[in-house]
Image (cartoon, rainbow, N blue to C red):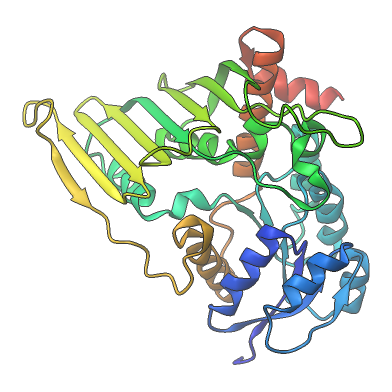
Length: 361
């Protein structure tokens, strides 16, 4: 009963190492195995551990070894579907990095395979960033009434280099609005409490990676976009993404307006603002500092990945289901796919269209 949970980490690049650091800081677990076809990535990951653990170049060999109680999948996006489908029959619980898969069809295949398998938790950890979590809780309390409008701005730095430069091409990532922005589409659904209905988007690759070439091929990933999402509840959301705006104060800003007032959250300022109609006015709202996460490891995402691992571990111990399951992963990908298509075809795209066409394919 007191034995630590043994984790296997599949994919030991930048995010895989981030997960390893979180696991090292978490009580009651241990990293028991590593897997990556890239020797350099394995060596870097091994250097983070105090003791040597078995290392595998292929996830199937790790599965055959039978030495893990749970798995973390942090391999490149386009490998998620095949890896998760190989894991499913074994019933092992998995925390998979976002996006769940690069297509809705693959998300559905994984979802179906896991209906009788182990717990599948999707790594949409932005839910657990302190200021965002405080905003979500405040909305859920009814503080601003029914949600009518939601805006999310992410102004940040360009995509970082990855092993083999896999993240430079839509065919590997699913596209920027799947790879990066599934986080925000998940938050939109969570905050509105509603399913997305249709998507209108405008975006381009205007600045980043234009001079890069990989085997003679230029990257094709978007570096900026506006995305409008209509929800079945009547609420509407907007994403403002710019990936050449690192000269900024806050990387993420969220604004939620309801019948009774407005909430705003700022990251990394870790601040919440509350304005209530008939109580506050423009320029005079309540400003609430949000305490930084007390996570034992802060990492890349303000301690949110540690909180995610903590809750994943506790769900394993108690037998509860995932807090962020495959359905959430599927819908966040579906909105990203619709947004990518809206840009490429210069039209409004419905979620029903995306789901039906992916199913037919």
